[in-house]
Image 1 (cartoon, rainbow, N blue to C red):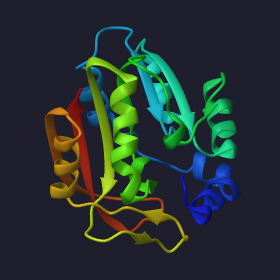
Image 2 (cartoon, one colour; image 1 turned 180 degrees about the vertical axis):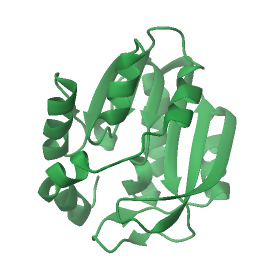
Image 3 (cartoon, one colour; image 1 turned 60 degrees about the vertical axis):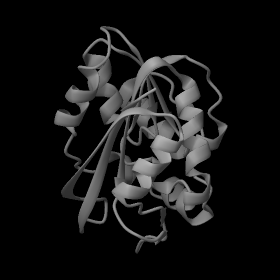
Image 4 (cartoon, rainbow, N blue to C red; image 1 turned 120 degrees about the vertical axis):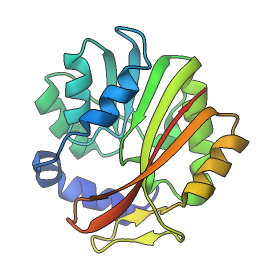
Length: 195
């Protein structure tokens, strides 16, 4: 998270954000996990309260949960019972360390101008054939929400172009309606692709 108001929101509201009633994206999680070998190494990039990591761990996967907010990471640690790395997207520097990268509603905060670089860091962190999942709030222009959080609001076309230009394969982008932390109706893009 490069945006100061976004970082401040998560640090200042960590307990409330992490403990909110959130519907686990079980269908997306199961679809993602079905593409990985048993016990696969997964990077949960921007794990929030840790619920998705908890689910993947319960299925026997080797999950490395991370979050860019130290306060949110502490909240996730209390749920998971083990350490959560504080990691900003732009500091990811692993090489072929993971079979899968899960980034549910986290890369939404990466500035559009640096998103291709972050996607390349994720690609580098994946083993050959590794699977990457991410969701984004759909839109046409970047901006801030009512809480002051920055969003990149990409279109499916923009994401497809970035991923194709970045050397990703088997790119699947689906759209659906949902909500966010603010409870407002939101159009979401779900991306699944492979290195």
